[in-house]
Image (tube, rainbow, N blue to C red; front, side, top):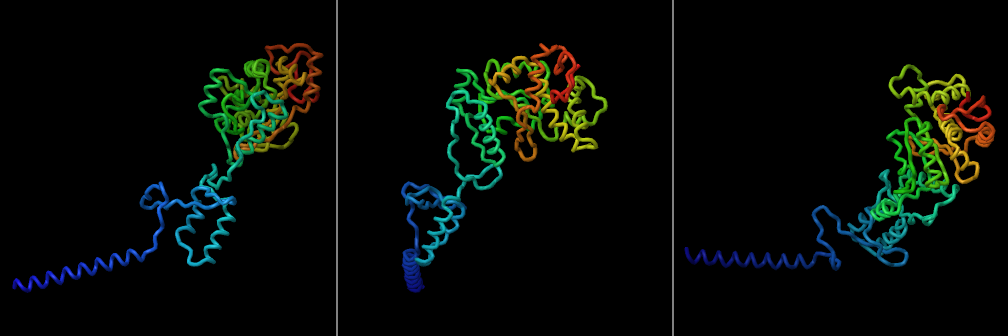
Length: 358
């Protein structure tokens, strides 16, 4: 029995030794990739980062998902390798791991150019800055300039130097700085339901024009405005809202006159446009400071409408009757502060493009 056990043990050791030899041979025959120097271990389910050469022959960092998919399977011959190299060259400029706000690949952009270099730009430059920023917002390629800690410290220590005063509705769906892709200290924004202009709004805009010296004032309404819609529907409203609606009603009447038979959404859309012109009219007629600055060419007053769905801003330009209104106001004298938006003496809406005066 003892001799039999000895023979079995020896035989078993021989089998184990043979398996070890086979295992070593098999391991040496498997292809393997060298681990890049300084690379981190790859966790389960994580692909090994690969790099590809750009047109200058330098490594351009981790490959995108498109290129990683090719790297998972080594090329079988030189023809396949050449094909993959061509494929990489074709897509090198398009592949990216960064996604835009719509979830689509974001093509690398040049850094935002500071077109005004710390000095207040003129009105045409400001308008272009706002238009360019809105285009980035619409396309999902916002760069969010001047939103860093250094800017917060700078504006806290050295004050604000905005280049635009913007009056718009209080609607929470209009994030003004994001709509124009601008940052801290660049836009002087005031908001009120229906973007109406009474004494307080006019006074705030005067601060922007006279003290902050903004070269442009924007009055911006928006599609589907609830305040304008309420004014179109009529009916009783309580509390202080009735005063707000009262500021918008002249624009609704003018929209109904210019678009006879319109109702519902069509009337609201027309009234939104007329309400922007109405607010511009009220600002020019109640604020001697703003009117004089516009007359001297020191600031430009423009209207706009923001589309809630697309994010795009439609620019209306200056009030069509701006020059006539300024001329009339010079003749009529100061505005009665107790009647916002109304001049002393009869002035027709046709002459001024806005609300009829008493």
